[in-house]
Length: 472
Image (cartoon, rainbow, N blue to C red):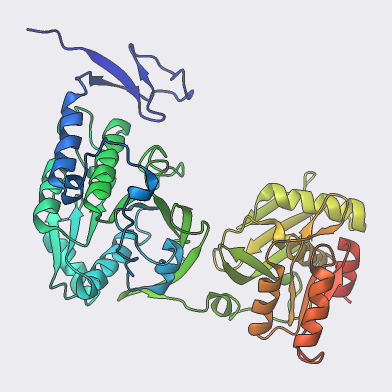
Protein backbone atom coordinates (compact mmCIF):
# COMPACT_ATOMS: atom_id res chain seq x y z
CA UNK A 1 0.00 0.00 0.00
CA UNK A 2 1.41 3.36 -1.00
CA UNK A 3 2.22 5.81 1.73
CA UNK A 4 -0.18 8.72 2.01
CA UNK A 5 1.62 11.99 1.43
CA UNK A 6 0.43 15.20 3.06
CA UNK A 7 1.22 18.87 2.61
CA UNK A 8 0.36 22.07 4.41
CA UNK A 9 -1.56 24.84 2.61
CA UNK A 10 -1.89 28.39 3.93
CA UNK A 11 -5.56 29.35 4.17
CA UNK A 12 -4.67 33.02 3.71
CA UNK A 13 -2.47 33.07 0.59
CA UNK A 14 -2.63 29.49 -0.71
CA UNK A 15 1.10 28.78 -0.33
CA UNK A 16 2.11 25.12 -0.11
CA UNK A 17 4.72 23.84 2.37
CA UNK A 18 6.10 20.44 3.23
CA UNK A 19 5.92 20.86 7.00
CA UNK A 20 3.85 22.76 9.53
CA UNK A 21 5.02 26.17 10.72
CA UNK A 22 3.39 28.64 13.03
CA UNK A 23 3.92 31.51 10.59
CA UNK A 24 3.45 31.27 6.83
CA UNK A 25 6.75 32.23 5.11
CA UNK A 26 4.89 33.65 2.10
CA UNK A 27 2.32 36.03 3.60
CA UNK A 28 3.40 36.21 7.27
CA UNK A 29 0.02 35.09 8.67
CA UNK A 30 0.00 33.09 11.89
CA UNK A 31 -1.73 29.72 12.42
CA UNK A 32 -3.06 29.48 8.87
CA UNK A 33 -1.32 26.27 7.67
CA UNK A 34 -3.70 23.33 7.30
CA UNK A 35 -2.72 19.76 6.56
CA UNK A 36 -4.27 18.22 3.45
CA UNK A 37 -3.68 14.97 1.58
CA UNK A 38 -1.40 15.43 -1.42
CA UNK A 39 -3.30 13.64 -4.19
CA UNK A 40 -2.27 13.56 -7.85
CA UNK A 41 -3.72 16.26 -10.09
CA UNK A 42 -5.27 13.79 -12.50
CA UNK A 43 -8.71 13.69 -10.81
CA UNK A 44 -9.08 17.46 -11.13
CA UNK A 45 -7.92 17.35 -14.72
CA UNK A 46 -10.36 14.57 -15.48
CA UNK A 47 -13.23 16.57 -14.01
CA UNK A 48 -12.31 19.65 -16.02
CA UNK A 49 -12.11 17.53 -19.17
CA UNK A 50 -15.50 15.99 -18.39
CA UNK A 51 -16.97 19.47 -17.99
CA UNK A 52 -15.59 20.50 -21.37
CA UNK A 53 -16.68 17.28 -23.05
CA UNK A 54 -20.23 17.67 -21.75
CA UNK A 55 -20.51 21.15 -23.25
CA UNK A 56 -21.81 21.58 -26.81
CA UNK A 57 -19.40 24.46 -27.36
CA UNK A 58 -16.44 22.10 -27.10
CA UNK A 59 -17.61 20.04 -30.08
CA UNK A 60 -16.97 22.82 -32.64
CA UNK A 61 -13.20 22.50 -32.41
CA UNK A 62 -10.61 20.97 -30.19
CA UNK A 63 -10.35 23.13 -27.04
CA UNK A 64 -6.54 23.05 -27.01
CA UNK A 65 -5.99 23.83 -30.71
CA UNK A 66 -4.77 27.38 -31.43
CA UNK A 67 -7.02 29.21 -33.88
CA UNK A 68 -6.07 32.22 -35.97
CA UNK A 69 -8.04 35.36 -35.01
CA UNK A 70 -10.05 35.85 -38.27
CA UNK A 71 -11.33 32.25 -38.08
CA UNK A 72 -12.88 32.67 -34.63
CA UNK A 73 -16.63 33.13 -34.81
CA UNK A 74 -17.87 35.97 -32.63
CA UNK A 75 -20.58 35.42 -30.05
CA UNK A 76 -23.94 36.13 -31.64
CA UNK A 77 -25.76 36.30 -28.32
CA UNK A 78 -26.34 39.81 -27.06
CA UNK A 79 -26.10 40.86 -23.42
CA UNK A 80 -28.85 39.52 -21.21
CA UNK A 81 -30.72 42.16 -19.23
CA UNK A 82 -31.26 41.14 -15.62
CA UNK A 83 -34.47 43.18 -15.40
CA UNK A 84 -32.97 45.89 -13.19
CA UNK A 85 -31.37 48.87 -15.01
CA UNK A 86 -29.28 49.71 -11.95
CA UNK A 87 -27.56 46.31 -12.05
CA UNK A 88 -27.35 46.36 -15.85
CA UNK A 89 -25.40 49.62 -15.51
CA UNK A 90 -22.90 48.01 -13.13
CA UNK A 91 -22.51 44.99 -15.42
CA UNK A 92 -21.82 47.23 -18.42
CA UNK A 93 -25.18 46.68 -20.12
CA UNK A 94 -26.20 43.23 -18.91
CA UNK A 95 -24.86 39.70 -18.54
CA UNK A 96 -22.35 38.39 -21.08
CA UNK A 97 -22.67 34.78 -22.19
CA UNK A 98 -20.09 32.55 -20.50
CA UNK A 99 -19.11 35.10 -17.86
CA UNK A 100 -18.33 34.23 -14.24
CA UNK A 101 -19.35 36.96 -11.81
CA UNK A 102 -18.51 37.15 -8.11
CA UNK A 103 -21.02 39.01 -5.93
CA UNK A 104 -19.47 39.85 -2.55
CA UNK A 105 -20.80 41.46 0.58
CA UNK A 106 -21.16 41.07 4.30
CA UNK A 107 -23.56 38.42 5.60
CA UNK A 108 -27.11 39.74 5.76
CA UNK A 109 -26.54 42.68 3.40
CA UNK A 110 -29.01 41.34 0.80
CA UNK A 111 -26.96 39.33 -1.73
CA UNK A 112 -29.28 36.31 -1.80
CA UNK A 113 -32.34 38.56 -1.99
CA UNK A 114 -30.96 40.52 -4.94
CA UNK A 115 -29.91 37.44 -6.91
CA UNK A 116 -33.21 35.68 -6.23
CA UNK A 117 -35.03 38.72 -7.62
CA UNK A 118 -32.77 38.64 -10.68
CA UNK A 119 -33.41 34.91 -11.08
CA UNK A 120 -37.15 35.57 -11.14
CA UNK A 121 -36.78 38.24 -13.84
CA UNK A 122 -34.51 36.09 -16.03
CA UNK A 123 -36.78 33.05 -15.63
CA UNK A 124 -39.81 35.13 -16.63
CA UNK A 125 -38.29 36.95 -19.61
CA UNK A 126 -35.32 34.91 -20.92
CA UNK A 127 -35.28 31.23 -19.99
CA UNK A 128 -34.76 28.68 -17.23
CA UNK A 129 -32.57 29.60 -14.26
CA UNK A 130 -30.80 27.18 -11.90
CA UNK A 131 -30.48 28.52 -8.35
CA UNK A 132 -28.07 26.38 -6.30
CA UNK A 133 -28.04 26.93 -2.55
CA UNK A 134 -25.68 25.29 -0.10
CA UNK A 135 -26.92 27.28 2.90
CA UNK A 136 -30.71 26.96 2.71
CA UNK A 137 -33.21 24.29 1.83
CA UNK A 138 -35.44 24.68 -1.21
CA UNK A 139 -38.42 25.20 1.11
CA UNK A 140 -36.70 28.18 2.75
CA UNK A 141 -35.90 29.66 -0.67
CA UNK A 142 -39.53 29.21 -1.69
CA UNK A 143 -40.64 31.14 1.40
CA UNK A 144 -38.40 34.06 0.41
CA UNK A 145 -39.60 33.86 -3.20
CA UNK A 146 -43.21 34.12 -2.05
CA UNK A 147 -42.33 37.16 0.05
CA UNK A 148 -40.67 38.74 -2.99
CA UNK A 149 -43.70 37.86 -5.16
CA UNK A 150 -41.65 35.65 -7.48
CA UNK A 151 -43.68 33.03 -9.38
CA UNK A 152 -40.72 31.32 -11.08
CA UNK A 153 -42.30 28.96 -13.61
CA UNK A 154 -38.81 28.32 -15.03
CA UNK A 155 -36.84 28.84 -11.81
CA UNK A 156 -35.19 25.58 -10.74
CA UNK A 157 -34.00 25.26 -7.14
CA UNK A 158 -31.27 22.88 -6.02
CA UNK A 159 -29.97 22.40 -2.47
CA UNK A 160 -26.53 20.84 -2.92
CA UNK A 161 -22.89 21.43 -2.11
CA UNK A 162 -21.22 18.75 -4.28
CA UNK A 163 -19.64 20.29 -7.36
CA UNK A 164 -20.21 17.15 -9.45
CA UNK A 165 -23.93 17.28 -8.70
CA UNK A 166 -24.09 20.97 -9.63
CA UNK A 167 -22.34 20.35 -12.97
CA UNK A 168 -24.66 17.41 -13.69
CA UNK A 169 -27.74 19.56 -12.98
CA UNK A 170 -26.44 22.35 -15.25
CA UNK A 171 -25.93 19.88 -18.10
CA UNK A 172 -29.41 18.44 -17.55
CA UNK A 173 -31.37 21.71 -17.20
CA UNK A 174 -29.27 23.79 -19.68
CA UNK A 175 -30.31 27.05 -18.00
CA UNK A 176 -29.91 30.62 -19.25
CA UNK A 177 -28.20 31.54 -15.95
CA UNK A 178 -26.81 29.78 -12.86
CA UNK A 179 -26.66 31.17 -9.31
CA UNK A 180 -24.34 29.54 -6.74
CA UNK A 181 -25.08 30.60 -3.15
CA UNK A 182 -22.44 30.56 -1.82
CA UNK A 183 -18.96 29.54 -2.96
CA UNK A 184 -17.88 28.81 0.64
CA UNK A 185 -20.23 25.84 0.78
CA UNK A 186 -19.29 24.18 -2.54
CA UNK A 187 -17.23 21.00 -2.17
CA UNK A 188 -14.96 19.29 -4.70
CA UNK A 189 -14.98 15.60 -3.77
CA UNK A 190 -11.35 14.89 -4.76
CA UNK A 191 -10.03 17.41 -2.18
CA UNK A 192 -9.89 16.55 1.52
CA UNK A 193 -9.97 20.16 2.78
CA UNK A 194 -13.12 21.50 4.41
CA UNK A 195 -15.56 23.65 2.40
CA UNK A 196 -14.58 27.31 2.49
CA UNK A 197 -10.83 26.64 2.66
CA UNK A 198 -8.50 28.20 0.12
CA UNK A 199 -7.98 24.98 -1.80
CA UNK A 200 -11.70 24.17 -2.05
CA UNK A 201 -12.72 27.72 -2.96
CA UNK A 202 -10.05 28.08 -5.63
CA UNK A 203 -10.61 24.65 -7.21
CA UNK A 204 -14.40 25.00 -7.27
CA UNK A 205 -14.20 28.48 -8.79
CA UNK A 206 -11.79 27.28 -11.49
CA UNK A 207 -14.12 24.45 -12.45
CA UNK A 208 -17.14 26.76 -12.48
CA UNK A 209 -15.18 29.14 -14.70
CA UNK A 210 -14.39 26.28 -17.09
CA UNK A 211 -18.07 25.31 -17.10
CA UNK A 212 -19.15 28.88 -17.89
CA UNK A 213 -16.65 29.31 -20.74
CA UNK A 214 -17.42 26.01 -22.44
CA UNK A 215 -21.21 26.11 -22.06
CA UNK A 216 -21.62 29.89 -22.64
CA UNK A 217 -23.84 30.08 -19.54
CA UNK A 218 -23.37 33.09 -17.24
CA UNK A 219 -22.71 31.97 -13.66
CA UNK A 220 -23.09 34.26 -10.64
CA UNK A 221 -21.25 33.17 -7.50
CA UNK A 222 -21.91 34.64 -4.05
CA UNK A 223 -18.96 35.17 -1.71
CA UNK A 224 -19.27 36.47 1.84
CA UNK A 225 -16.98 39.23 3.07
CA UNK A 226 -15.37 38.52 6.43
CA UNK A 227 -14.53 40.99 9.19
CA UNK A 228 -11.09 41.45 7.61
CA UNK A 229 -12.75 42.61 4.37
CA UNK A 230 -11.82 39.53 2.35
CA UNK A 231 -14.10 37.55 0.05
CA UNK A 232 -14.62 33.88 0.90
CA UNK A 233 -11.74 33.85 3.39
CA UNK A 234 -8.90 35.02 1.12
CA UNK A 235 -9.36 37.39 -1.83
CA UNK A 236 -8.12 34.63 -4.08
CA UNK A 237 -11.04 34.71 -6.52
CA UNK A 238 -10.91 38.22 -7.92
CA UNK A 239 -8.28 37.39 -10.54
CA UNK A 240 -10.19 34.28 -11.68
CA UNK A 241 -13.65 35.71 -12.30
CA UNK A 242 -14.69 38.11 -15.06
CA UNK A 243 -16.44 40.64 -12.84
CA UNK A 244 -16.49 41.41 -9.12
CA UNK A 245 -19.51 43.18 -7.64
CA UNK A 246 -19.74 44.31 -4.03
CA UNK A 247 -23.06 44.94 -2.30
CA UNK A 248 -22.31 47.59 0.31
CA UNK A 249 -24.32 49.53 2.84
CA UNK A 250 -24.56 50.42 6.47
CA UNK A 251 -26.47 47.88 8.51
CA UNK A 252 -28.66 50.65 9.98
CA UNK A 253 -29.36 52.32 6.62
CA UNK A 254 -31.89 51.05 4.11
CA UNK A 255 -29.78 51.94 1.05
CA UNK A 256 -27.54 49.38 -0.64
CA UNK A 257 -24.83 50.19 -3.18
CA UNK A 258 -23.91 47.61 -5.81
CA UNK A 259 -20.37 48.59 -6.79
CA UNK A 260 -18.39 47.11 -9.68
CA UNK A 261 -14.77 46.63 -8.61
CA UNK A 262 -13.66 44.60 -11.64
CA UNK A 263 -15.37 44.13 -14.98
CA UNK A 264 -13.81 42.66 -18.12
CA UNK A 265 -16.85 43.66 -20.17
CA UNK A 266 -17.56 47.19 -18.97
CA UNK A 267 -16.47 50.17 -16.91
CA UNK A 268 -15.21 49.60 -13.39
CA UNK A 269 -16.37 51.44 -10.27
CA UNK A 270 -19.91 51.77 -11.57
CA UNK A 271 -22.57 51.77 -8.88
CA UNK A 272 -26.22 50.86 -8.69
CA UNK A 273 -28.35 52.13 -5.81
CA UNK A 274 -31.08 50.05 -4.18
CA UNK A 275 -33.28 50.49 -1.14
CA UNK A 276 -34.19 47.56 1.09
CA UNK A 277 -37.92 47.09 1.67
CA UNK A 278 -40.04 44.26 3.01
CA UNK A 279 -40.78 43.15 -0.55
CA UNK A 280 -37.09 43.13 -1.51
CA UNK A 281 -34.59 45.53 -3.03
CA UNK A 282 -36.12 48.48 -4.90
CA UNK A 283 -34.12 50.50 -7.45
CA UNK A 284 -33.30 54.14 -6.70
CA UNK A 285 -33.29 55.85 -10.09
CA UNK A 286 -32.20 59.30 -8.83
CA UNK A 287 -29.85 58.66 -5.89
CA UNK A 288 -28.55 62.25 -5.73
CA UNK A 289 -32.00 63.63 -4.98
CA UNK A 290 -32.56 60.95 -2.34
CA UNK A 291 -29.26 61.58 -0.54
CA UNK A 292 -29.88 65.34 -0.49
CA UNK A 293 -33.55 65.17 0.53
CA UNK A 294 -32.92 65.53 4.30
CA UNK A 295 -30.25 68.21 4.04
CA UNK A 296 -30.50 71.20 6.40
CA UNK A 297 -29.79 74.41 4.52
CA UNK A 298 -29.28 76.57 7.64
CA UNK A 299 -26.50 74.58 9.33
CA UNK A 300 -22.80 75.36 9.17
CA UNK A 301 -20.29 72.69 8.21
CA UNK A 302 -22.38 71.31 5.33
CA UNK A 303 -21.31 71.21 1.68
CA UNK A 304 -22.54 69.40 -1.44
CA UNK A 305 -19.88 67.64 -3.52
CA UNK A 306 -20.10 65.91 -6.91
CA UNK A 307 -18.40 62.52 -7.05
CA UNK A 308 -18.00 60.32 -10.13
CA UNK A 309 -18.93 56.70 -9.51
CA UNK A 310 -17.95 55.01 -12.77
CA UNK A 311 -19.78 56.99 -15.44
CA UNK A 312 -22.45 58.33 -13.07
CA UNK A 313 -22.09 61.72 -11.34
CA UNK A 314 -23.44 61.58 -7.80
CA UNK A 315 -24.20 64.52 -5.52
CA UNK A 316 -23.82 63.84 -1.82
CA UNK A 317 -23.64 65.96 1.30
CA UNK A 318 -20.41 66.22 3.28
CA UNK A 319 -20.62 67.36 6.91
CA UNK A 320 -17.86 68.61 9.18
CA UNK A 321 -17.79 69.57 12.84
CA UNK A 322 -14.88 71.52 14.37
CA UNK A 323 -14.79 71.91 18.15
CA UNK A 324 -12.05 73.01 20.58
CA UNK A 325 -10.17 70.03 21.95
CA UNK A 326 -10.58 69.28 25.65
CA UNK A 327 -7.47 67.08 25.70
CA UNK A 328 -3.83 67.56 24.86
CA UNK A 329 -3.99 65.66 21.59
CA UNK A 330 -6.75 66.77 19.20
CA UNK A 331 -8.52 63.97 17.41
CA UNK A 332 -9.93 63.67 13.90
CA UNK A 333 -12.60 61.14 12.96
CA UNK A 334 -14.03 60.31 9.56
CA UNK A 335 -16.95 58.33 8.22
CA UNK A 336 -16.97 57.68 4.49
CA UNK A 337 -13.78 59.72 3.86
CA UNK A 338 -10.18 58.57 3.91
CA UNK A 339 -8.69 59.62 7.24
CA UNK A 340 -5.27 60.40 5.78
CA UNK A 341 -6.91 62.68 3.21
CA UNK A 342 -8.68 64.58 6.00
CA UNK A 343 -5.41 65.06 7.90
CA UNK A 344 -3.77 66.41 4.74
CA UNK A 345 -6.61 68.90 4.16
CA UNK A 346 -6.35 70.09 7.76
CA UNK A 347 -2.62 70.71 7.25
CA UNK A 348 -3.29 72.67 4.03
CA UNK A 349 -5.97 74.76 5.77
CA UNK A 350 -3.54 75.55 8.57
CA UNK A 351 -0.51 76.31 6.41
CA UNK A 352 -1.97 77.88 3.24
CA UNK A 353 -5.25 79.42 4.41
CA UNK A 354 -4.41 80.38 7.98
CA UNK A 355 -7.16 78.44 9.78
CA UNK A 356 -5.81 77.11 13.06
CA UNK A 357 -7.77 73.86 12.97
CA UNK A 358 -4.79 71.85 14.24
CA UNK A 359 -5.78 72.44 17.86
CA UNK A 360 -9.39 71.39 17.36
CA UNK A 361 -11.24 68.11 17.15
CA UNK A 362 -12.43 67.61 13.56
CA UNK A 363 -15.18 65.21 12.54
CA UNK A 364 -16.07 64.59 8.89
CA UNK A 365 -18.97 62.53 7.58
CA UNK A 366 -20.53 61.58 4.23
CA UNK A 367 -24.31 61.47 4.63
CA UNK A 368 -26.10 58.27 3.64
CA UNK A 369 -23.41 55.72 4.48
CA UNK A 370 -21.37 56.45 1.34
CA UNK A 371 -17.63 55.74 1.02
CA UNK A 372 -15.96 58.19 -1.37
CA UNK A 373 -12.31 57.79 -2.28
CA UNK A 374 -11.78 60.09 -5.26
CA UNK A 375 -9.98 63.42 -4.62
CA UNK A 376 -12.58 65.61 -6.32
CA UNK A 377 -14.39 66.04 -2.99
CA UNK A 378 -11.36 67.76 -1.40
CA UNK A 379 -12.76 71.25 -1.96
CA UNK A 380 -16.12 70.32 -0.43
CA UNK A 381 -14.53 68.72 2.64
CA UNK A 382 -12.18 71.70 3.17
CA UNK A 383 -15.08 74.14 2.74
CA UNK A 384 -17.21 72.21 5.25
CA UNK A 385 -14.36 72.32 7.80
CA UNK A 386 -13.86 76.05 7.24
CA UNK A 387 -17.62 76.65 7.47
CA UNK A 388 -17.83 74.91 10.84
CA UNK A 389 -14.69 76.66 12.10
CA UNK A 390 -15.85 80.16 11.08
CA UNK A 391 -19.55 79.49 11.76
CA UNK A 392 -20.45 80.73 8.28
CA UNK A 393 -22.91 79.02 5.96
CA UNK A 394 -22.12 77.69 2.51
CA UNK A 395 -24.98 78.66 0.14
CA UNK A 396 -27.51 75.85 -0.11
CA UNK A 397 -27.65 76.20 -3.90
CA UNK A 398 -23.87 75.78 -4.40
CA UNK A 399 -22.03 72.58 -5.34
CA UNK A 400 -18.26 72.30 -4.94
CA UNK A 401 -15.87 70.34 -7.15
CA UNK A 402 -12.07 70.26 -6.99
CA UNK A 403 -8.93 68.51 -5.82
CA UNK A 404 -6.70 70.35 -3.34
CA UNK A 405 -2.91 70.22 -3.72
CA UNK A 406 -0.34 70.59 -0.95
CA UNK A 407 0.50 74.10 -2.16
CA UNK A 408 -3.10 75.17 -1.67
CA UNK A 409 -3.93 75.14 -5.38
CA UNK A 410 -7.09 73.71 -6.90
CA UNK A 411 -6.34 70.99 -9.40
CA UNK A 412 -8.47 69.85 -12.31
CA UNK A 413 -10.69 66.76 -12.06
CA UNK A 414 -11.93 64.38 -14.74
CA UNK A 415 -15.31 64.70 -16.47
CA UNK A 416 -15.87 68.18 -15.11
CA UNK A 417 -18.57 69.05 -17.64
CA UNK A 418 -20.64 65.99 -16.72
CA UNK A 419 -20.43 66.84 -13.02
CA UNK A 420 -21.45 70.47 -13.53
CA UNK A 421 -24.42 69.61 -15.73
CA UNK A 422 -25.63 67.06 -13.17
CA UNK A 423 -25.60 69.78 -10.50
CA UNK A 424 -27.58 72.08 -12.81
CA UNK A 425 -30.08 69.28 -13.51
CA UNK A 426 -30.78 68.86 -9.77
CA UNK A 427 -31.59 72.54 -9.30
CA UNK A 428 -28.32 74.01 -8.01
CA UNK A 429 -27.75 77.62 -9.05
CA UNK A 430 -23.96 77.83 -8.61
CA UNK A 431 -21.05 75.48 -9.00
CA UNK A 432 -17.55 76.27 -7.71
CA UNK A 433 -14.86 74.55 -9.78
CA UNK A 434 -11.08 74.84 -10.35
CA UNK A 435 -9.92 77.25 -13.06
CA UNK A 436 -7.22 74.75 -14.05
CA UNK A 437 -7.76 72.35 -16.92
CA UNK A 438 -11.11 72.90 -18.64
CA UNK A 439 -12.49 75.13 -15.88
CA UNK A 440 -12.28 78.49 -17.63
CA UNK A 441 -13.51 77.04 -20.94
CA UNK A 442 -16.43 75.38 -19.18
CA UNK A 443 -17.24 78.65 -17.45
CA UNK A 444 -17.86 80.34 -20.82
CA UNK A 445 -19.76 77.34 -22.23
CA UNK A 446 -22.15 77.21 -19.27
CA UNK A 447 -22.67 80.98 -19.44
CA UNK A 448 -23.84 80.57 -23.05
CA UNK A 449 -26.01 77.53 -22.32
CA UNK A 450 -27.80 78.82 -19.22
CA UNK A 451 -29.05 82.34 -18.50
CA UNK A 452 -26.93 83.92 -15.80
CA UNK A 453 -29.82 84.16 -13.36
CA UNK A 454 -30.53 80.40 -13.68
CA UNK A 455 -27.13 78.73 -13.30
CA UNK A 456 -23.54 79.93 -13.31
CA UNK A 457 -20.12 78.43 -12.85
CA UNK A 458 -17.54 80.13 -10.60
CA UNK A 459 -13.86 79.32 -10.99
CA UNK A 460 -11.02 79.66 -8.46
CA UNK A 461 -7.32 78.89 -8.71
CA UNK A 462 -6.48 78.42 -5.01
CA UNK A 463 -8.21 77.02 -1.95
CA UNK A 464 -8.05 80.36 -0.14
CA UNK A 465 -9.89 82.12 -2.99
CA UNK A 466 -12.47 79.32 -3.20
CA UNK A 467 -13.23 79.53 0.54
CA UNK A 468 -13.70 83.29 0.34
CA UNK A 469 -16.24 82.77 -2.43
CA UNK A 470 -18.06 79.91 -0.71
CA UNK A 471 -18.19 81.60 2.73
CA UNK A 472 -18.81 85.16 1.55
